[in-house]
Image (tube, rainbow over all chains, first blue to last red; front, side, top):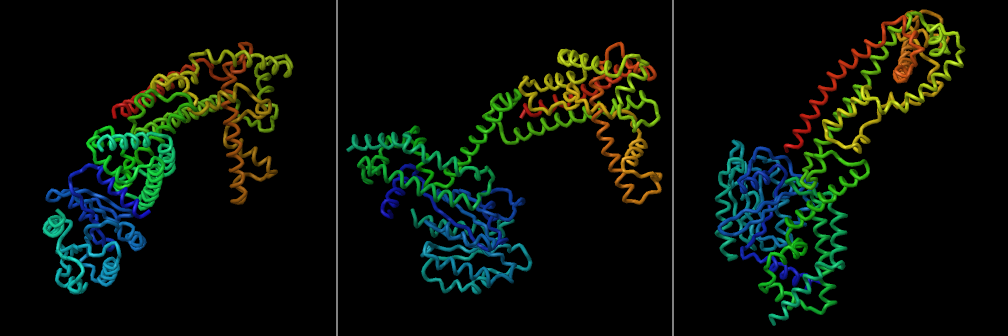
Length: 187
Length: 377
């Protein structure tokens, strides 16, 4: 069955007949981290009418000639068990952290380390957005990186990027990292 | 080799149009599509359903390839041939592509859901008679919003009709009050008939009277439909005009309760007719409860009970009013003396019709405005 499945998927790939390359990106993080705001910012949509995500959102963004399919899945505790259903065939994980929510740094660190251990995300590059830098109480990205022990990640590429999804500041820098490190390597 | 792949491709395309493929896939979509709306956000269940769909399609294709004796290599080559890139084939392959592309899958399911909704609409139409023009014209283009507006419009019309019926009943009650003498007649169980005969100073027996009346009622019942100036017919026809509905649509409007009931008056309902004042109701309620003290000397609960009873009696009376109203135009000229002590009935009726006309005019305008808005969208 596994063999056949693989075969069928490659067939379907051909059927699509698209010469354009596609990347599957999964956008995760705790509730209220700003995932949907970031997604809408990436798609240049209005970020003022966002409500807590109960399911998931998908947007396709073109970045340096590559189509990025970004999946933003709700971060509420009751939805987190569903995350792993969305990890298959993922090319990149974007993990969003509310830099001003110090009380939940430990919780968010635990969730991230669980994801890193997922079989489907083995070796998958991680981009961490230290979001909400527009808030006065936000911790700097370097501090968060330390708290998350990012320097111990040896099996994959990673990057932490300070940003404000609301204003869009820093978001493009993160996307540039993606295009330099993943898009160009895939081509 | 090229011929080979062409054959394989045609065979696959043929399979995707065959019942072996169409039935299970369509069944699946029809069963699962109801949760798919066109909201921006996706529900978690979509993923689950998509997974089930993948499994179904894979099983179907696998079986097919085994049956026909195509191996994957052939399948692959066929699909990468230039023929596979044609527009028609791309459409045929859409349900296959949907296994790998959630967005395609989602749009197929949303589309299926909308199709089923439209089908349901058609069924409703067949059951309740034709829908108004604005619903039938290009029904496939109807958005959910428009459908909703149509429902609102129908509700508005229904309400206004109910209000109108209430108003008519109230008017008749008022008229009746004027027509009656002020003394209480709660004990008068023979109500309508004896009263009528008394005021008419008729020498004929009560029995004789009622049989005459029944005859007239029968006659008038048959004549009723043809009477264009009656308030009832006016309402219906104005609704009809303003909406452009055909006769079938009238069925969906609530039945005109008072006149319909009145056309078949049960003999028992005739029993209680008479005075309308609250006092008389209370008196009647009091009497029925066997309480002899004056109302304001009673305990709060007793008062409440009495008031409730009075309310009930009033409701019963209102029903009777509606019934009577129906009977009134049927009264033979010989009975006209009944109304003699009261103001002449003819001017009253005219007054009503003038005011009603105004009202109907207003209602018509409203309906037209609503209709316009619905159609413009």
